[in-house]
Image (tube, rainbow, N blue to C red):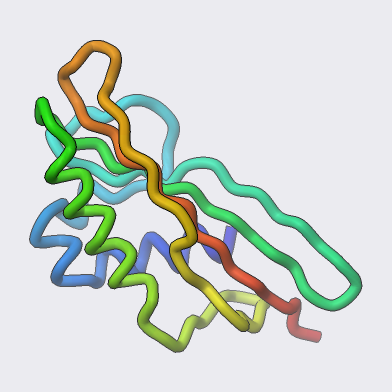
Length: 127
């Protein structure tokens, strides 16, 4: 949860991201887009070992467009916003947080383009 909150806050604070998607269009919920442009913080996964954890968060970029150009532009702005250091995560020390994958597809109904951005963080729980 700490990563989802930190990612959402970082994206909403990025001028490059909010030039493409309003801060009100960045949210953590399920469902299809209700806006012409939005970033939905979606699925997450955590994998643990004895010392570190690896957490994943998925961002879904939705744009009402026939092509994929704007989705790719927004995903690039997200990648740039998330590579800034340092990261402060509630209850954790972040050793690395970055975008590791992007994938783009067209909505089956043809109304939206859809980008999926995978964020990975290597973290250690604070004592």
